[in-house]
Length: 100
Image (tube, rainbow, N blue to C red; front, top):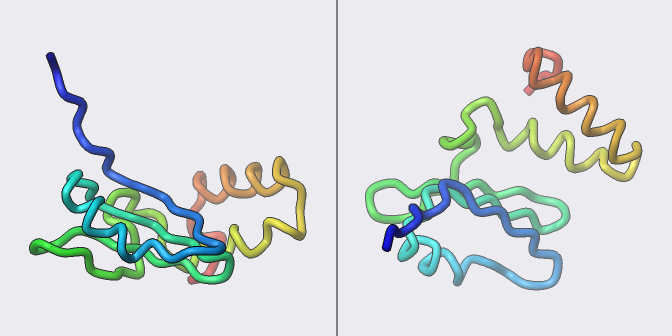
């Protein structure tokens, strides 16, 4: 039987609970990076030298920084989901549109 590799990225939305105690579980599973969004703040944790370290930028998706992700997340109530997804796709074509 072939085992699937661990995911490179896990994303948690924590509005009512805290995920920090789950980091050891993700480490045991071999997950390289975790994003945790609490409704206001985004935390990017990358596994490095045996533990998760908070970072400003994704290692798995290096084009994405915390500020870029938060820019889109905080505008989700201002625009429709489809309009925001279109903007995100446009940004992916030209990542210099948003100042960090």
